Length: 330
Image 1 (spheres, one colour):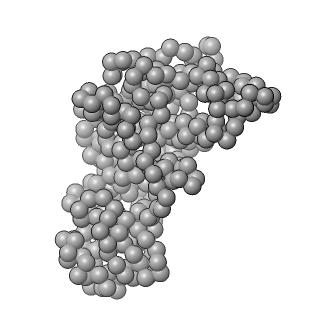
Image 2: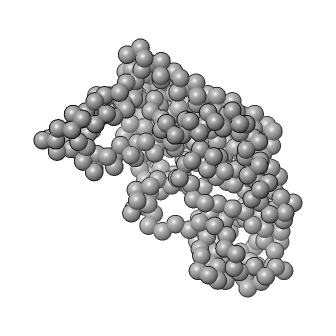
Image 3: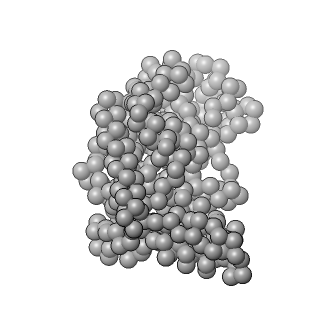
């Protein structure tokens, strides 16, 4: 993320007023997010670490640097730093600049307007997007997902099961199913970190604006060339979001409770992380990768956050086991 060469330019962009696009001498670009609150810097950094421990490729590489106009790295942009009103020795989060991004909408199965996704829906979705004369059997994992008309009242209407679809999905059908698999990871990830600024933001505002679920999701983008979903701006994770659980937990739980499809590598990594100790692994990455200057001004993940994270890991794994039981009973 952070090039070893000096910063050549700071340009307006990358969101909020004090954010800047950094251009290094070797041409590398990164978005720099400047925040007054240290916990937002911690949230962004440790959320990225968590995503990496879960082998999620949907998070842009991130790192933290301290602003030091007396160092060679920043000496060419002292005037730009002054104009941006950045303070000396403040940490800034650098995130790799990614081109070809487009807004990403919320798929219908995750919209709280009497939507659901079960094995019959998987069949219908695939059939509608696939040539009718194909004959190869392709096993697809189906899952039950239903939102009642009243936000906050969720229910399972169908058992979880696998369904053999006797057709070969077209690239369009596979693209749609891959998108849903990425959304499974997104819901798990946002539940773990208690992210307030993505789908939960849409759900919370749904009570005032029924059309908001049809709008692009906040802080979510898609790379137009690869169709990879990118989970952007996770600064509320693990600290600020945890402090507001009483207000938003119903919305976090609504999404998780209605999810019964999970990517096996994600759940395997989550079980391994629980066994190894999530707090220990996250702190080890911080100690290993952050510079002495960063560690002097940025605390590690606090014990209270580690405890809440462990509880939320257990809750996700309980949901996985519940879905397995539903599958075995069907």
